Amino acid sequence: MTKIEPLGAVRERVTADLRQEIIAGSLRPGDRLVERELAERFGVSRVPVREAIRALVAEGFVHFETPRRTVVRRLTPTDVKELFELREALEVYAAGLAASRATPEDLAEVQELVDRAATATEAGDAEVITDVNSRLHDRIMAMAGNSLLTEALEPVAGRLRWMTRRNEEWPQLLVEHRELYEAIASGDPERARAHALTHVRTNYRSTVRHLFGEEAP
Image 1: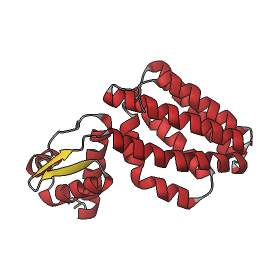
Image 2: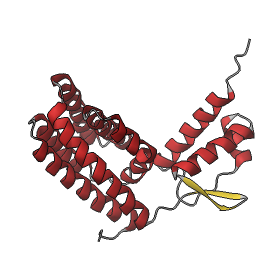
Image 3: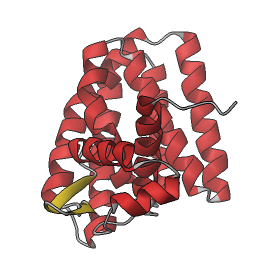
C-alpha cells in the first residue's frame, strides 16, 4: 500500500527544498516560480506549491511582481543593511551572554564546529562551510540561554544565510570564528562582545562587496 504524505508535510518539504535552492543559488534573483512547473518537478499538486510560495514570500525570499508573476527576490543594499543591523544587535549581545553561561560541553561543541569548518575550508567545500558556520552561530545563540533572542533572529535566519552564502572569503571567516570561540571560551563577556561586533561588521562589508561589487558605507 502506498503511504499518503499529509498535505502539511508536503508543503513543508516543498518549502524547504525551494528555500535551499534559493540559498544555494540554483534559483537566482529574478528567476520566476511557476506553480505548474514546480508541481510537476516535485511530483505534487499545485496546492502545496502555492502554499510554499506564500511561505517564502513571508520569509522574504520571493515576491509577487504582479498577481500572476512570482520571482526570487532581488536583494538591495537596504535589505542587507537592515538585516545586519538586526544581527549586530542580537548576536553581539548573545556572545556576551554565552561567555558568561557556556558550559565545558557547550564549548566542546563549538570547538568541534570550528574544526569542521577548518577542514571544509581547506577542501573548498562551500556547502559544508555554509552549513557548519550557520550551525556555529546557532550554537552560540543557544549558549546565551535566552529563548527570546533566538526567536527574534529566527524569522530572518534563512535570509542571512542566503546573503552570507555569497561571501566566499572562507579563510577570513575561519579566523574570525576561531577568535570568537576563544573570546567566548575566555569567559570574558566584554571580549566576546567586541569580537562578535568585529565579526558581524566585517561580514557585512564582505557581503555587500560580493553582492553589489561595492564597498559598504
